[in-house]
Amino acid sequence: MQKDKEDRSQDACAHHHLAIRDTMELLSGKWKIRIIGSLSFGPKRFMELKGYIDGIAAKMLSKELQDLETNGLVNRTVLQTKPITVEYKLTPYGYSLQPVIDAISDWGMQHRNKMIAHLKKA
Amino acid sequence: MQKDKEDRSQDACAHHHLAIRDTMELLSGKWKIRIIGSLSFGPKRFMELKGYIDGIAAKMLSKELQDLETNGLVNRTVLQTKPITVEYKLTPYGYSLQPVIDAISDWGMQHRNKMIAHLKKA
DNA sequence: CTGTATCCTGTAAGATACTG
DNA sequence: CAGTATCTTACAGGATACAG
Image (tube, rainbow over all chains, first blue to last red):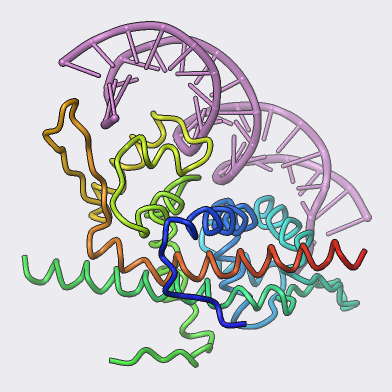
């Protein structure tokens, strides 16, 4: 079932809106996409994530991870180490967001390069 | 300059973070992505946009459009009709966000289908 | 280490009324 | 039609301290 990428009619507009709203609701907030982005590089422990995601408070990280887990995007595993550690990783469903993350990341890189080029010209 | 899509090393992680953060800052808020999504189907007037984007208040639409214009993603044109109308459209730079919008929209559709399938099974 | 419990604040965003 | 001006509120999100 190949999706019709060329359908930019007004008729298709409404469906896209619902889809966009749904996605953005799941990814709402300042941190979720960045958490998923981090985990897309492999499983990570709590403090490890906190280190990667600059500026996030423990409370926020905890809350966001719970949200993501509730929505089936992230899996939480308690490892019986001493002291205990917890491993977070993307579920297959979470990995299905990869194209979204990549698109956002790619655009950000282009944006960044454009800014740099702009500065050099000036 | 083909980007290395396969580079999922930890080393690349930091760059992705900055890129993701940049993009999400530009698209922050509840409405911007949906506005861009609407405009990706073609230019629209203010009230037309308001109609398409369910639930948005005039104040919000106005503010978000100003933000988008400031960031060079949207172009605003006053048409000397009677009474005046204003046309908003994506700039080429705004259109460059198309892959992002599409990725978000596509995922949302899949998500929606998954939910429907889940309901039918139960 | 992995969180939770409080407390606190700024701001996103809604409602309503109004202007050119 | 295309906005702006105010007022209000809810909640995201930060700081700090503490717990298992």
